[in-house]
Image (cartoon, rainbow, N blue to C red; front, side, top):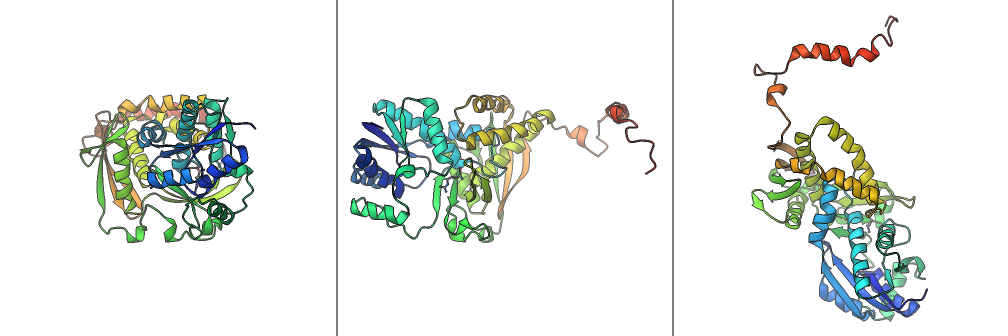
Length: 399
Ligand code: ARG
């Protein structure tokens, strides 16, 4: 493969820090680094220092939290997306955003290739590479971790040392972690044996439910056209709101998940997730939608939610079906306007109240009091016709 210039998705971790130098040595290319901030704790000056120590010619550091929240998290919230019923897809949602900006910067820099630090057996390589190829098939893609000779983190650390790349000696940190504002994904180390209970120190942003405050806390959320816009009466940006809920619900140990997950590449993997804001907002949105939408819509949407989560997980963010489903989920969001009250209790968020000007709930129909206005006389005829196809179907036998 002949290349002149490559844009590397750069996290500043051990893998990508080695990759900067390795790309230069192996392919003789100019390496431009690109770091997207999606909510992980990182220092721009450290990133710069490491990238340049590896031989990068330039580094782009961009805070993309706002775009991430509006163009990636919000559609997933509207879709009620959870892979295999649990994982709210934090990592999976971040990858297509990174792919998109890798392509943008590669085009701006007139680079002929992009690169990333994903391992050769995970989902993230698929999400980035399929994303890049959908957006610009002329770009070459190099995946150093699928090519290089290093067999272990220790060997990479030796390589960094020899090449004077200042990475922290993280020999002790046993977990592989990916973090953004929608959640944290934690794997490897002691978690690789599914029998092992996750140790408390594996978690990053949630407190153990057993150490949660004794008294519950209430969150009042205002939704406007499907978008959560106010928390406890205070208007805030989507990013701020997500971060605030993360910290409040995180103190109650809300949003922890331990999942035996089926990767796209066929492997089963054991992953821990922390997603307090996703837990609260997915609950709140679904409860409000449940108030304002009819039965047929709600039941059918569940099927589509599952499919949507699969498409996102499988790296097909830019695919026609995924985009069509986005339009479906968006179609009713005008009605998802109103208020939701969430109670934070140790380990669990509970919806304790909801109201909306678009509510379809009728107390007059539901009540068991004298105020009841439901026409019971119509029930008899309804059942006669509803049961008609089955009449006598199993009849004739004495039970
Ligand atoms: N299993 C998750 C996914 O495929 C997270 C992957 C990244 N996890 C990590 N710990 N680095 O979306």
